[in-house]
Amino acid sequence: MEPSAHQLISQVYAAKKDSRAADDLIQAYMPFIKSETSKFLKRPPDSSDDELSIAMFAFYEAIRNYSKLKGSFLKFAALQIKNRLIDNYRKEKKNQGQISLESTADDDKSELIDTIQDTHDEYSENEIREATRHEIEELSAQMTDFGVSMSDVADNSPRQQRTLEICQKAVSYARNNPEILEDFLRTKRVPLAKLAEGADVERKSLERHRRYLVAVLLICTNGYEIMRGHIMQVLKGGK
Image (tube, rainbow, N blue to C red; front, side, top):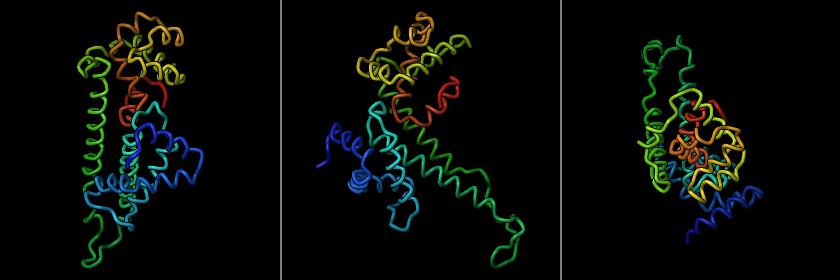
């Protein structure tokens, strides 16, 4: 019988402090790990596949890096596994491209430069595109609980550098104060007063971009790794 979400979170937090508990959790969720690996390989993995080992380590990383603010643990772990597998695939492709161009192929002795495939990595791009699409769908569904849509966010995004910087300060303050994010998730309301006071910015500016802040704060509290990297680059704050 599968544990409840609350039980699983308790197990994850216990595994953070106990390596044996972490090993037990990994073993208990091997079917899940194999399933996520299978999605990437487009076939069931076996014990000889490096990807399965990478997925297991990614699951362990998910245990170490998880917090309740990141939402569902299994969704967070699934994204961690996919990202690690994509990184490994890219690394392998890069290493393959470092073979000497003056070496010869096996039979016809032709130069390897004639046999190297197009450097356009369509497979990994497709994987990233699919992962991004999945994140957007998850975020869009979660935003409905806050009464905000993707079009609302697009219409409500800061247009001026000054207001972008104000939002940056507010988001950075929230990320450095987890209780702010917890309050946001619990009440489903942007804590404008606390953000304005803590970040020392104008509340009116934050109010004008409340719907935009809903999306950005949700990205900061869940396992939206791809979108978080993008939004943090736009805001020029955080990692």
